[in-house]
Image 1 (spheres, rainbow, N blue to C red):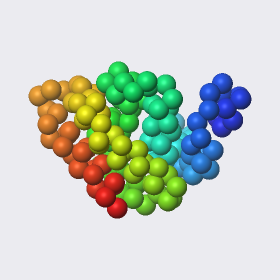
Image 2 (spheres, rainbow, N blue to C red):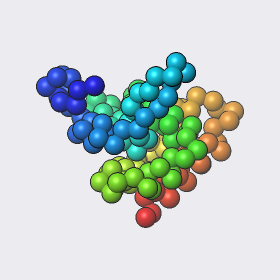
Image 3 (cartoon, rainbow, N blue to C red):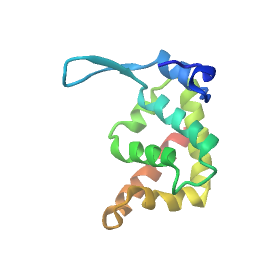
Image 4 (cartoon, rainbow, N blue to C red):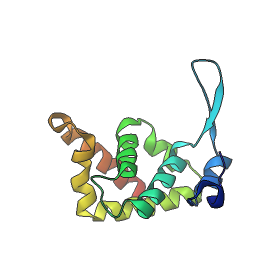
Length: 135
């Protein structure tokens, strides 16, 4: 995948680093592909949200992806805390901003799309983000 904005017709400053630190993942066919590690995926999605999300935490596909990853990964806190300083600091800064924004907090339940089972999941995400921003 190209990382240059002129080729992609949009720019994301995390693409070059994401590509540099990409991890190899095996597919069922046996083929191997390189994907962004979790911290770089989140950083690129946060930047995309800032660019095209228009501050709409509830309907942005980028924010939905961010919340889905935070909810679904059992190792998100560990992966971010061991990431290179540049991406770790960026994520901590942006998560700190999100936690101060009531629209983000309110969007957690809506993006999880399971009202009967969201309360524990919402608290888990908030706890993860708080732990990452307090370091």
